[in-house]
Length: 109
Image 1 (cartoon, one colour):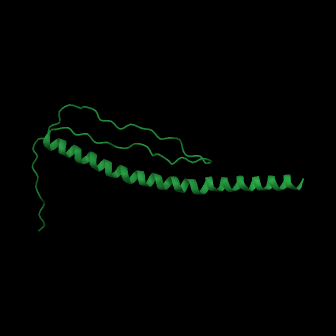
Image 2 (cartoon, rainbow, N blue to C red; image 1 turned 135 degrees about the vertical axis):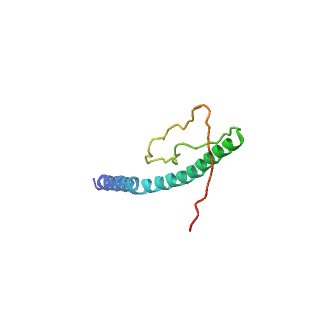
């Protein structure tokens, strides 16, 4: 009887420890993954901006890629958020014209 009680207490302690890890450590690890993804996206969106500017200057279209969604590391006994999904797309809105593009610099004084 003592062995069964000890086994049940040991198992309960293991479950509580795993629950605490899931509630505290996993969200912190996922926040780090999301932060790195956010930094990567900032760089990729800068590439998109630069491609738009170059396309406007040269008239030749360019391709750039943006990684949508975060890939969380797989964990054997713990749960991750569901995979993220989304789309980023452009649409052909026709010709764009700019008229009277005169640039002046304000003078101090």
